[in-house]
Amino acid sequence: MCNVAIVAAMEREVAPLIRGWKVREIERDGRRYRLFESGDAVLVCGGIGADAARRATEALIEETRPARVLSVGFAGALDSTLKVADVLEPRVVVNAADGARTDTGSGQGTLVSYAAVAGAGQKQRLGKAYAAVAVDMEAAAVAQGAQARGVEFGALKAISDGADSSMPPTERFISGDGQFRSVGFAVHVVVRPWLWGRTIVLARNSARASHALCGAIREYIGREAFATELNPR
Image (cartoon, rainbow, N blue to C red; front, side, top):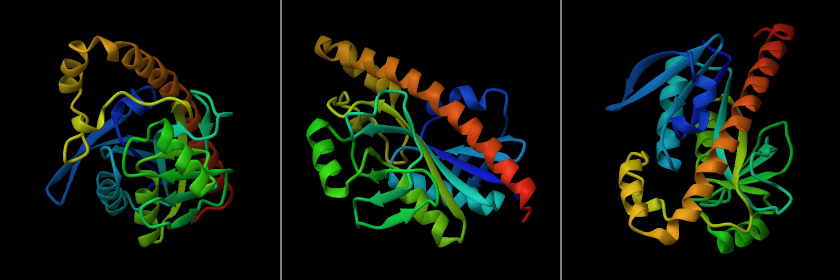
């Protein structure tokens, strides 16, 4: 058993955190995952999108029997007051696919999980439809996977792009199992100079968001460990 089981999409989101953590591989339903462990926390990078997040959550819960599952990663701002590298601990997570809502029991604001990378126009529509302040692709799937197994759920999301910005065209480079084909994306960008500026900004903002996210995760793990000491299961 562990205290906090963390589900991220990509290793680059949490690289500063897991540096030095122990690593082992697990296999569930024909898929292999790298499991990072440190103290009473474990982390898996399940891939991009709801299906990949759901499968990773199920595998992690089965393997580690955690007290709480935490969805972490990058999010796009829907509220113009949120800036790159701000970290959100949402009180409510909404699944845009079916309207299901999960109350995390702490934090503030609403995060909506959407099936695609949201551009500036879609961000406006999502913000109005769900009174949400940020959008991601995985948190709702992680929440529903945790709830189905009676495990507490929380989320931490770092803003990687502002409310008025659009990402470079990355979706076509996401494989069926949720992995990002970075080499293919790089080849696509290098012959399209009009994408260079947005791609450079994306890389810079992602690095800032990752640093802020990892600091917030460390604080969260410490907070949960302290709470467990006060109220052992």
